[in-house]
Length: 314
Image (tube, rainbow, N blue to C red; front, side, top):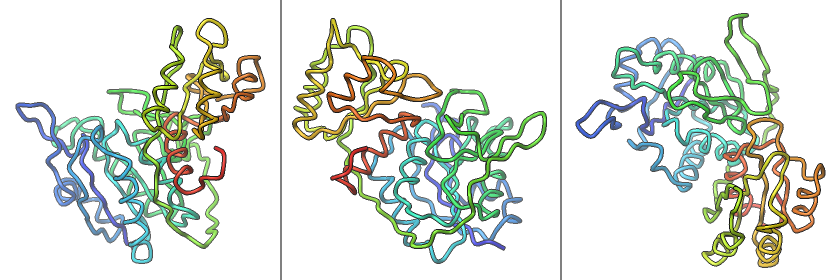
């Protein structure tokens, strides 16, 4: 039986109804007591980390959790983490970058409805997460609803639908549909040399490009000490190059050493800065393409790379 470290952080799955709304209350032991079937899927050890709404999590939490997984790596076969849905994709992406040559499962899950309520999706999500953990499939994953998704490909697309997450620009690892199970399994090859690089540079700002956006927002970010910017651009990577021309501000930022990455506002297909003149001009000004990455993946990768690979362009 696989040894699984069960890490809990709060989120909707642990919430109870209070006079102030839903608040995280349940700890890991409470979750296991409510879903005793999980004990058949592994030898489970519980470690409660926080009891927070995931909106209140910080990049420092990702670093601490990556280091904790590293410190316990030789003692466990897999790791399951409960997490609030709102920032789960950020945490999954961050852990994906931090856990280098990961040879074991790290599975995040949660729920849209608290486990304490009768119509909760928590039970099925926990069973899915622990099943993936018990399988030994290496990588960081989100197991939620009818999908198992690579951490860096996940995006929350629904606020209430029980299939809250989508796999962006890559098929889900597992998809449970009307026609059965579809698989897109990653390699089980263990590359060896597992290590943790948990440092992050938190001074990264995401800016959504909108009609009429003033270029001074980029200057402001630089003035406030931000080291990286993720521009959520139009379509394949378009920015305003005419009425509210962003290019001079981009050039000023790049000249001061700020790394700028472009991702698309569109959910699928990603960025191609070679396709249109606006994208070509942005690239010439120093903007790097985020390719197919989600906003969550791009923000966390830029935070991570600025701290761990300062000489590399992302």
